[in-house]
Amino acid sequence: MSVTILKDKCRGCRLCLKACPFDAIKMEDGKAVINYDKCTNCGACEASCRFESILVEREEKKTGIDLSAYKGVWVFAEQRLGKLMFTSLELLGEGRKLADKLGVELSAVLLGYEVDGICEELIHFGADRVIYANHRLLQNYTTDGYTKVIADLINEKRPEAMIVGATNIGRDLAPRIAARLNTGLTADCTKLDIDEEQRILLQTRPAFGGNIMATIVTPKHRPQMATVRPGVMKKLEMDKSRKGIVESVKVKLNEDDIRVNVEEVVKSAKQIVNLIEAQYIVSGGRGLGNPEGFKLIKELADALGGVVGSSRAAVDAGWISHDHQVGQTGKTVRPKVYIACGISGAIQHLAGMQSSDCIIAINKNPDAPIFSVADYGIVGDLYKVVPMLIEEVKKLKEQN
Image 1 (spheres, rainbow, N blue to C red):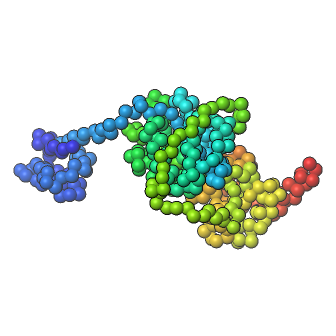
Image 2: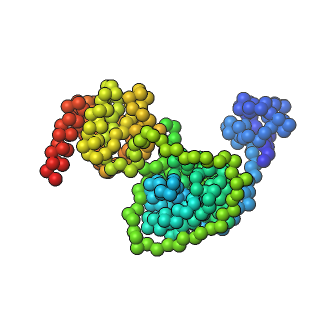
């Protein structure tokens, strides 16, 4: 890349001198001159010139990648202790749509040790092929082990896209794979689509605190990689009649490849609320006024057979733990019914629950933003409304 000043167009306005961050431009005989010893070819001068007298010639960086050699969509099938994570089923549903648009095969990549039973489950939920890496060193998740195996598989089989759940494991694993393969990664996506003409994965995620949605592409590298927030995508219904291929692959992995040994897996003694799979969620916000208000919220959630959620404001106030938080910095959920009690409806909270099938909002303020996404809005004191809802739910249960 080089910078050239067209002397016949230069007016000597000195705007480029002010714009250059490296003091690489000086004036000679009323014209701008480049000091190539200082110039870094950043292009700031070109952008500042009003008279099109500066040209920056850019050489297109060649990746040396034959994009046409990459085919297929992969989904990382996350399992823990032999149980397939719900997020993986959501990704299969989305991966099925992407693969169908591209006209390619959908593969689930399963790593573990003697978890053969999961393979059929993955096929029943949408996978055409299960790439199964079975090895004793893959029994427990390790960053080194999983990264090496998946990166080796990608180099061998060359998928054009791979999606990973934005779980604790996925957020650790995906960037390591992307870095090893020298490809791009878009984190925490809330929407995926395909530009069918260019065969490019359109990866959409919130930006600037959720105020805009940015669509990001990886046009020159493969595979195109994205992590997807749990609870955002919709899983397909199980189809036990679906047939697929289970491909057991040879794993080249030894203990020297793994720098951290897992000595023991200890489950948390504290029960973590499962917001992602809940069908009924009752959430409380700042409008509760105090932490005692969550007792009423829990009573309604229990009556519905659901779980308790929360806005960030209530979590920040110390009224409830973070594992209950719904929103951009919490969980993304899509239950059958979401009841928001005393939640104003900041855009960050709406981003985490607006895909719910039915939203019921209870708030004193008739102008609260939460009502803009609510299917049913109740303007009133939640401490009067919620007990009435609890009573009605209990009556309906008794009748049935």
